[in-house]
Length: 258
Image 1: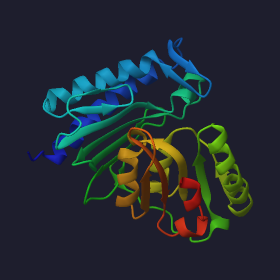
Image 2: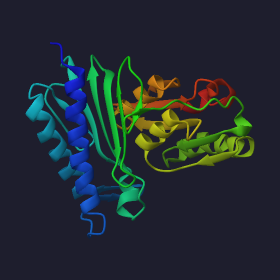
Image 3: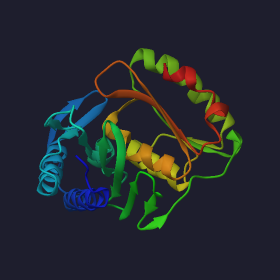
Image 4: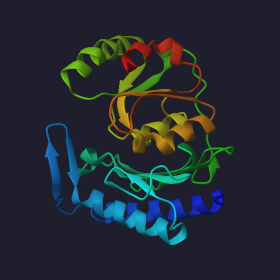
């Protein structure tokens, strides 16, 4: 089966914009929490946005399954699959922090070939088709050209387990001292889009799910950067580093990912 990637991109853009409109319309409304654990929140709106995305994608590509943060439909061993995070940055969104996005990727044989990230608060839309450039609102973007850690802004993320904190905090302290700034924003999709756009120079996440980076990792590569991921224990779980292609080895974080 060969899908038309331009048509797939157009469908993903429509779905992302539709979900973003729901996010924006409900911004000042009370949020219904489905799950509230010590370090995360799942909203009823997450489920509603994924259902909206799935419905939109099925209209154009009924045969393609969906792997989403809020559930899976279809055969994950299929040649193509959508990978969806309906609200990446749910905790930010639930607390009234306007830093969250919709992320949709199309994968062929588990390799991303189309990516869309939409920020409904800034109206910024990143798009990419493998082999082409990363676009922000239709204009090509590139990673930064900074080569020194001391000049760089680095985003980081890590889980709050005891073992993760013990491994992560020494690197956080070291990089905070060495880099221009270290930031923890809370939306992996946007952090990757920012690396692709040159706003951030690198982004490190010790444990992350596939739907968080399936679109953004491709964008970083297409914008001239490097995206490195390593499978870890857990279904669709990875460690990852994204950078402008000049900093990963200098960051000295490979031991953090293990």
